Length: 157
Image 1 (cartoon, rainbow, N blue to C red):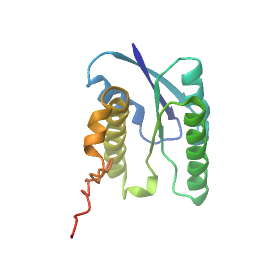
Image 2 (cartoon, one colour):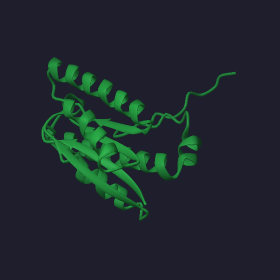
Image 3 (cartoon, rainbow, N blue to C red):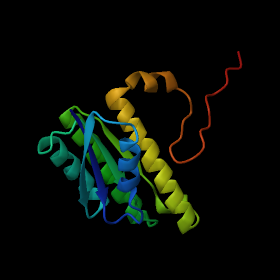
Image 4 (cartoon, rainbow, N blue to C red):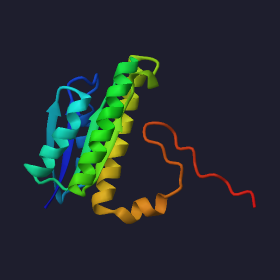
């Protein structure tokens, strides 16, 4: 049985992991979800590493919500580098799903964006593990997680 690791933070203002797990469970069976929650975004790389080493997951979904301050964006960048390093070290995918607080104009919009992005990234994680051919068919499609898709660039010649 395959295992999908979900790492999230207490710093986030939305329980994105709840939405991600629900989206994964809606895909059916054949896998188990293992969740680890850590305090902040820079803790996500270690959480994913522990999911790989201790829980033997096949893939991780890393969920985080950086704040609006410049410092928060720097922390998100550092966390992203750590996630990339962890994924390369393990030779396994980590699907990074960050929602920046300033991407939304109010709390309702932030909640909706966080939900949509977490669900869509969870479905991408599922596809990476079980249906990579679906991702190949969507290549170059201009898909966006949390926002409307923009579509492919139209060839002019």
